Image 1 (cartoon, one colour):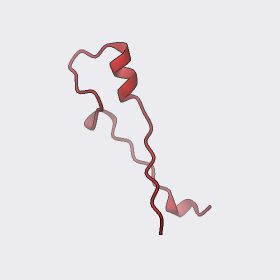
Image 2: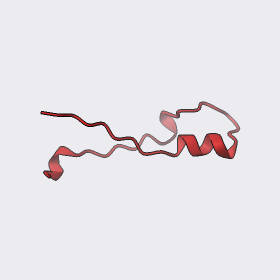
Image 3: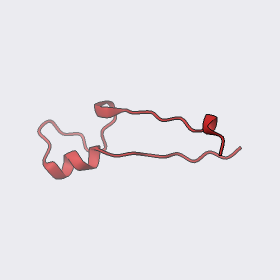
Length: 41
């Protein structure tokens, strides 16, 4: 695998899945995630 084809990006609090002011632990867990996008050439 060519490592140059993978890019990691962290969005932190800028793109939450659950938009909340005072999150429950379950909501906080949903926002703490890793996403992968597979792109073919």
